[in-house]
Amino acid sequence: MRIYDKIIGRMFVHEEEFMENEAVSKNFIEQEIDKDLAEGVYDHVCTRFPPEPNGYLHIGHAKSILLNYGLAKKYNGTFHMRFDDTNPTKEKVEFVDSIKEDIQWLGADWEDHLYFASDYFEQMYECAVKLIKKGKAYVCDLTPEEIREYRGTLTEPGKNSPYRERSVEENLELFEAMKDGKFKDGEKVLRAKIDMASPNINMRDPIIYRVAHMTHHNTGDKWCIYPMYDFAHPIEDAIEHITHSICTLEFEDHRPLYDWVVRECEFEMPPRQIEFSKLYLTNVVTGKRYIKKLVEDGVVDGWDDPRLVSIAALRRRGFTPESIKMFIDMCGVSKSQSSVDYAMLEYCIREDLKLKKPRMMAVLDPIKLVIDNYPEDQVEYLDVINNLENEELGMRKIPFCRELYINRDDFMEEPPKKYFRLFPGNEVRLMQAYFVTCTGFEKDEDGNITVVHCTYDPQTKSGSGFTGRKVKGTIHWVPAPYAVKAEVRLYENLIDEEKGVYNEDGSMNLNPNSLTVLKDCYVEPNFEDAKAYDSFQFVRQGYFCIDAKDSREDALVFNRIVSLKSSFKLPK
Image (cartoon, rainbow, N blue to C red):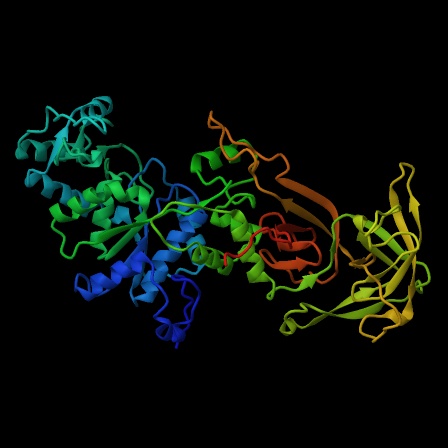
């Protein structure tokens, strides 16, 4: 039996285990679907993810993607990928390509169900004509300002447009003239004829078509009228036989209009809209206009800058699809709005990588360590276990010789109490190698330590069974003649967490230390096959990923995904 990871429910379970675990509590959407299937409202389940191609997807979209895909898989249904490209003013092919790549990377497989809303323009036009013929839509000449004025407020009803009672014949003639390009942008609109006194402002004769003389990325110049989202979206769902249109809570007030459109357009087995709460992460930037400004101002190097939470940025930083699925699963599905700490996402990537990745040695702030009593021309190749918690990852060899690099903070000339690393007269273990004792050091003319000298004890080699004495400190190292120079980028939150994301004037509270670039780092010589997006643990430092944009074979660039220590505690 094929194995699917279930992302709906409290834990990931495999397909063959699923029937045995049916008792796992279901979220409210699954309960509604079960009810619809039991009552014969639908005999199958079909869900969709319908992004507008006007920007990059972010972590919030991942929740919707994985929720819709997971529901389709759970009920042996189908999952549709549809570009809601009815607005030619904002859409770009660049975004179409990036969205497809992001969804495939997350593991949501639409198979042969890839659609474009713009392919349904003809059917949408026919639906609009049907509404006119039924006396349910009319062409209106009011300006946008007048429409706003006539709409009323939350406490006051609207008033009818003076064009509301145009005849069916006149409306058909005017709507065709709109289609034929005889009016300027904004000169006329087609409005649904519902109820200007409705307590729901969305039902007060909403605009369903507008004139826009613009070239569309898919249909070119064929159309100069375009449907509004609230009209197009339910029609798209109905055409594709979507059963459950799962969307976020801000569309709850739009549901009466959704239902009105599919009912008045007389679709058989119309889809049903169900809303769930959005995913909010604390102290992150997700708004497209804010990210656009950050890109334009050069604060970040693009929509995939690793400090952002676009899916492309998370991928570039080193997050995995599995970690994002785990995170979404832990967030759960509900109707109550809440925000989630970014530390929970970091917890998920640590959990995903800790048994999968080799633990490599890298020195980010190097000083030279010289073992004075080690033979100058000698090189040993030490056998090192790639991951002590997962022996299946095997072994590798690291050259060991007289001159090494260690981290600058692993040596102190005058150490405080409880400092167990290198200082004059102290003995430590070099990880996977020998005990060494500090015998001296060198400084440059500015007083900076440049070289540390020590001696080693040949009897203390790791794995030799030596038990003669113990040391309190272990430090890592790389072999100086064989080490590979690399750039390492350390990321922190883009936002100043103490101040929050936005000021009252709409500006952002940016953290000036969100990126630290370390140019002169050294890594052990075992990265020759490493490629973009490959990730590793750097011992004692964190998890790092090879940057997909800037890293080259002869000039490696690593992004820190996350440090080793977590501030997140699993809820009991």
